[in-house]
Amino acid sequence: MPDAPRLSLHVPEPEWRPGDQPDFSHVKIPRAGTIRRPEIDEKPEDMRDLAFSIIRVLNRQGEAVGPWAGTLTDDELRDGLRHMMTLRAYDARMLMAQRQGKTSFYMQHLGEEAISCAFRMALEPGDMNFPTYRQAGLLIAGGYPMVTMMCQVYSNDKDPMHGRQLPVFYSSKEHGFFSISGNLATQYIQAVGWAMASAISHDRKIAAAWIGDGSTAESDFHAALVFASTYKAPVVLNIVNNQWAISTFQGIARGGSGTFAARGHGFGIPALRVDGNDYLAVHAVAKWAVERARRNLGPTIVEYVTYRAGGHSTSDDPAAYRPKTESDAWPLGDPILRLKLHLIARGLWSEERHKQAEAEVLDSVLVAQREAEAIGTLHTGRRPSPRDMFEDVYAEMPAHLLKQRHEAGY
Image 1: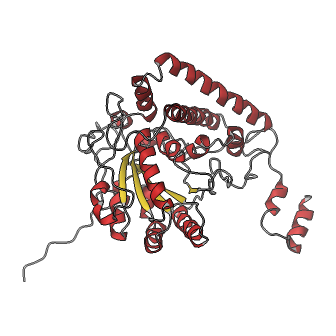
Image 2 (image 1 turned 90 degrees about the vertical axis):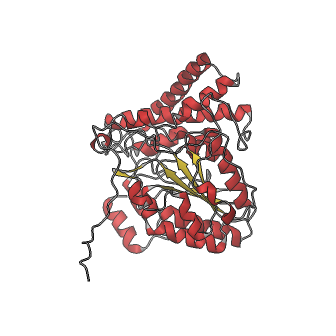
């Protein structure tokens, strides 16, 4: 018997490292408007093609074309642009605040604003999102008070989490924003369970789960798909593929599946890929998947192809693992600039109006920041009381905690 070759372990490698010239020419990007729009009740096995392409609406001239266009009114488009601009301005101010020592930690949404802002517009009151730390656009587009968001980032006396959560780990039942977990992928099984409960109680509310590309390697992701598929849970399973999981490129988590959306095929779940920097495409696909869930047709996987332009967090230096020019080379552009171009092409916007809007948005963010900082920041002002450590755990506080609180002077 001839000697067999020695085995070797395959470890995926990114195509370029710091100092290399990034080249995304291998990324297959179909022309806008060329990807079909299936019927709401189309069978998953007949939709396999949609997991290997990218649904796009906006072309390079800013025109909305194809079967996925036309789901938003003029006013909704203008609102969408303002929501994204607000999120970007908020990000910039909070990032600066972290650098100034006013908060311990922050995570940006730079380049990903269209995903959460557009998705929120497809939901109804009572629907519940189970987000990661990069979906604050769900709150901004839903009208959540910015001062409250900032107070949570600053961990001051008006922090609705009372200092018990990391900055940017927001939570609001009223706004359909479930508490963020630092243990990634837990939101997937939570969302599927919540959706199953809604179905069991014959309610009309649906759930939306959110996960990053790296977290799809967690076991909770696969467990959620089993239950969602088996029980036809009314849930939209969102995968934000921003190319990077902290310092690990997306190929590690994707494995040999080709796309993240394609993983739905093994579970019999319909799966689509969408241009995550195209506000109109994101909204159209979100609306399609939400309607499918609300009509009791089961779950849908949606993969958003986008790019994380900033670092993973303020504790991360992306220059250590990717070329500095990689963001500039990303072929799907900037979501704000693309929607701006569309509005200008429609005669609904102008360069002058955009500059005015930027000033208005920045002013509103600065006003909110001054109000939040007047209450307190990480090192100054009013802070949550240590008494809060003993609250909100038991309906009736047990004797040993009452004793500890008394000994602590609270």
